[in-house]
Length: 490
Image (cartoon, rainbow, N blue to C red; front, side, top):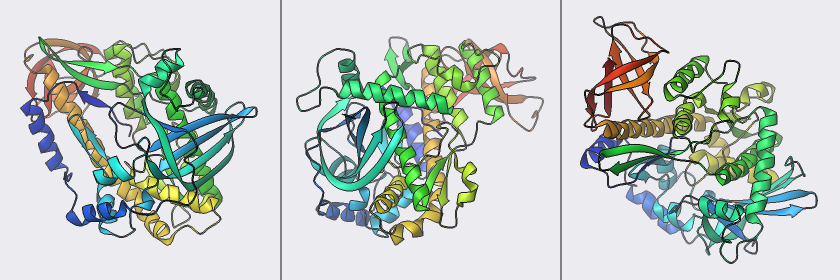
């Protein structure tokens, strides 16, 4: 499931820390790494670099301000009538010994878990924010992708090999967007045509995505701010450059899936079409938020019309993550899905076969996908340690991703409770988006309500819940440490 981005733009009150610590303990998320894993990570820092030297390519990274776990570095140039996209991805296999203490711990974690007051990284900071991160002006081992596109943005040729790269600058989305809009130039050493080329390729790939029937969900950051009245909920609109940059990652994932198909072995990211019940639930949430969803308009068509700078649209885009439930992984060629079952391997939102390979610092499966693609391009056998792990990776990723999503949902609940603290007894307008299965308990029906302002959701109780109708609800209980918001029909 896609993540909802949370930020707390003020010092977190004690009750939020209590809520998040309880949540971490409930989900058994370990805050520290075992000593043996830390020792292996530290020892791996001096691992020799790859033979190919690609430090002459002026790569840059583009990330949120303050990021340290930099997975990807980018370079684009014109190639006749088309384009050559170079994408350097952190090479974690350079540092992690298969079967070692660090590898075992990484398999337990699966993914980096993000929250509003900090994260629990997949790899020790020695690697994730140090030797394996593509930090500026540092020689780093990377999986260097070369993706040749024609003038319409279609992929013509793919190659990947391990190389040494050196990023020229760590840029923020706002910096690149400002430069693309004619503002101040980027730092010295950064190609002056980068913003325009990223815009051009990004636009072309977005157009191809629409032609395929795919849809990208631009999820705005959800911020909790403090003013003289207490805590308020706000959203940071996404920038066009974030969509362009995401298209480079999607392009690489689609190219990786193609290489895996050629190799006859791999692990694909899959997503079924949205459950009709989730579409109905989202339509009700749209009614609560005042988002017009005309009959006959698909969710993909609607999402492309929304502007995350509009608060109601931003809240709706956050709610729309429910449509992406059911994502999973399928292993190919090792007792997993056979080639004859190809239709079952599609990613519905991308409308293509797709593999995760662009975030190995933060996602375990990417390290394996990268090694498969590297071996295939080199004409070599896929390493045995990769083949041996593939059958178990889908369940490992499913378990650990579910845990990360549960932490994210719990953090959202805690912060939404914080926003409503002190407002017990007030009446709000909203729409009941679903009713719990199982009927009434003691004459009371329970369900979920989405309130329009502030844009939060919570539990609701009443004798007969009018699902899908705009109603008034009274806030009867708020408990931040318990991550609880409860309404009743007014």
